[in-house]
Image (cartoon, rainbow, N blue to C red; front, side, top):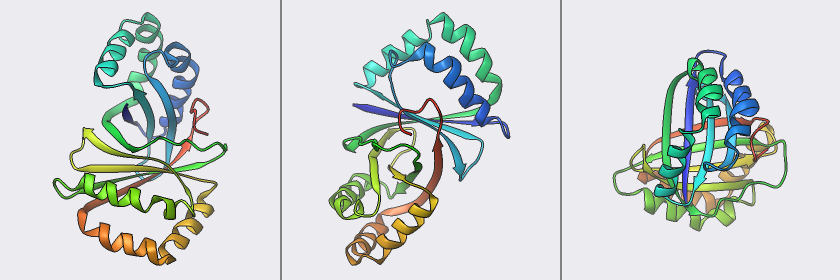
Length: 211
C-alpha cells in the first residue's frame, strides 16, 4: 500500500473555498474510484492557507494508472479543475509507505496533528522502528493514526498523524507523555537522529472520512 499526502497552499483566506469545491464537486466526481480518500483537512495552526489530503493506492503503478484515468474524466477536467486552479499557489506531494497499519479514529469531532521529521541521512527507518517500539506506551495518552516513511518528495523523512479530542486534550496528553520516564527514554534515544521537526494542527472538512 502506498499513501500520498498532498498539500495545497492557497492565496490568503482561500483554503476554505478550496475545501468547499472539493466537497461539493471534486468528491462526487472522484469518489474512491481514482484512489481512496483517507482524510481531508484545513490547517488551523502552522503554515496557514493550506489544505491537506491523504490518499491510498495499492502501489505506485496503481497510483499512476488511476491518476491517468482521472485526467480523462471530463467532469474532473471541465467542472472541478477550472474552479480550484485559480485558488492554488503551490502543490506539494509526499509518497509514503506505512510502518504500521493506518488506524483512523472511530470518534468524530477530532483535532489532528501531522508531524513530520527530517532525519539524518539514512536513519529515518531506524527512528521509525524506535517510535513503533514505544507506540503502545505513547497511545496511553492519545491515539496514533499512522506512521510513514517518505519514499518520494522529501528524503530521510518520517511523518506521523495523531488524533485528539480537542487542543486542550492535546496539551494534556503531550504533558503526560513527557512526564512518563519511558517516553523520556525514547526521546533521549531518538532525538540524536533528528535534524528538523515540524507540526501542523488540522481540522477535518465535511468531505473527510476521518472526522
